[in-house]
Image 1 (cartoon, rainbow, N blue to C red):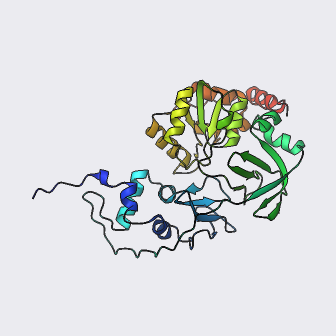
Image 2: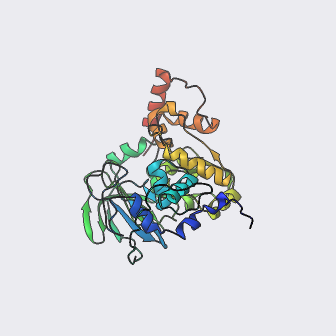
Image 3: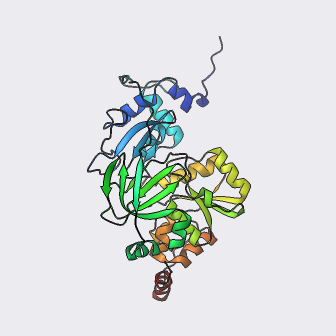
Length: 353
């Protein structure tokens, strides 16, 4: 009998899930997780009250943090984010921990973990969200002008200020400026000045932000981090769209359509320079590698994690310059003169709302 060494290609997401379920993976790696659809405190950040749930969406278990929209994962991306692993590293991690025997030439050590008994899981129904809209005021103007975003742009992207919102008939009062984002598939509530429950949403992961406002065609389109970044880029004259979370990977269909309509698709994700794992750039690299796209990284010396913060911190001219040059991290930082800083601030303050 001829024995052939097993190829590492056998270690795939499907081969993992043929031996262990998403539920069992979450139970093993996420200690606070007790039951599907039951909220618990986040294990990925400081959390004063339960804001996270693991629920079934479109046949897959999803980890959703309603206090931090960036924390939206399937079981594989959750492990990758938590332990700073690339996708193949995640597969090997699960394989070894569960003694699945799928990794070529590697023998697991230690006792085999006890498999959690999987209950019957019912598909999660999106929450019913209603809002009470109010008039725009000076506080709104001050907040959005920081990012060069006008009321006209906010209306184009269907963003409205609100006083209250209801989730499944439970009423919440907005004690600071709050906004409703409306999409074809639901609402997102954005409370930018709040630390907890900054986001509430009934929008599915497949829903794209800013995609329907794109022109039919153009030279360049950016895949960016949030609707705020989409609107900020629009104010600078650039087309862009965003997924519901940076932790998601765009579908092949989405990228193919974007490439057919635009000459170049560029990923402009957060530069989480203060985090060793830099999750924004880790995901940007993954997407660029998968689809052969260009990555635009905001240089760390600006100390601004995204394009909106870059505009707020340094002004629109610096932001435009970074985009035009497609700056690389290796470029030497250029200090702004007092005159440049003042000019940028003055220009920003004169933006009409």
